[in-house]
Length: 434
Image 1 (cartoon, rainbow, N blue to C red):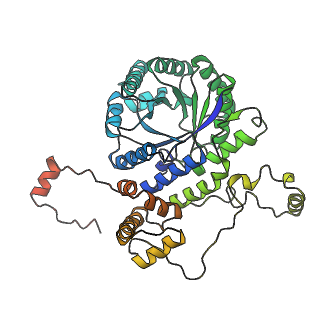
Image 2: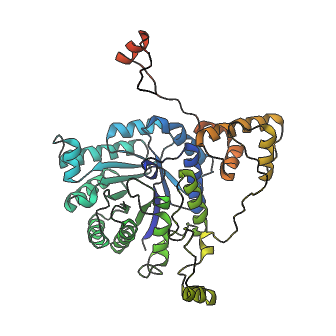
């Protein structure tokens, strides 16, 4: 029987949340946590973006070393052969990719301004797929941007031609959050039935229906006889109103009336890791989890009404659909209220050793301690937040990878007018800066 898998896009789409973002070390820890949870795939970044390359290659090195073993890392790029070529040249260890192309009349005209038509889109996409095949890509997904506003017959044709060229999956993108669950089911069923390709469900939350449409789309794909891959972001992060929330989608597929014991979810997923993942991601983004967030919000298992409290105390099943222990919740959170020693960009060796002693990590010699201290200092500059236990442990166990992740060489190649301005010494500060 076909299954439901999860492709988390926090590190590609979630980080595009306006006015928020993640440091490369934080993105790496999220990849490790997704792997620990058994999530099928992480769309971990942009292989054509220069500031991403050290992070991307370092994470691919973690795969090569057997540190990331369950979660496949995939790069996102435009469905243009030259972008694919550049991506695989930039990241030689890259094996999985998603190739994105606009498919609606609105997007084709609005972006290309009459210079491209549907035939051009087909040709460009297939050329990109063929290029990825030639580069040895193992899993190639084709993304239809604005699929929910695209002609369905064109989507079927695009998916069919991409499949012939070597694509494995087809991503249906509800880019504007326009779709509703009913139309999602109908369109995804028809698309999956006609193409017999595994379908990815990528939904935004502009109308508050991202989770509902994602799971309904997964149901349609499986009913049509193919695997479903739900795209999610941790805590629903993403552009505008965000993407479909990982934990909400997972619980809907495991616990809801229409899914429970009827549809199979990837058995590798460990729900008990959800709480830790959600908490870390909220800390990394600097955005608290809403109190009423399903499963991981502070009030998800809180009862105050007399009837509810009485019923929950008698039998938790009276007012709780699932157990908090299933999510990894229930352990007390210890908060220091007395003396606290932290380590950061200005931390010294004594305080640093104290922090690592609490993690039961002892340094073999002074050289090891000094090197890890410097990396921890850089990490604090990098994240601008107190380092978490996971981050400190990662720096200790994989210092070379941590150093690579935190190394960014800005693109700076002054030519033309910029070079002229620099050579003439015309660098007087204008009054408008301050």
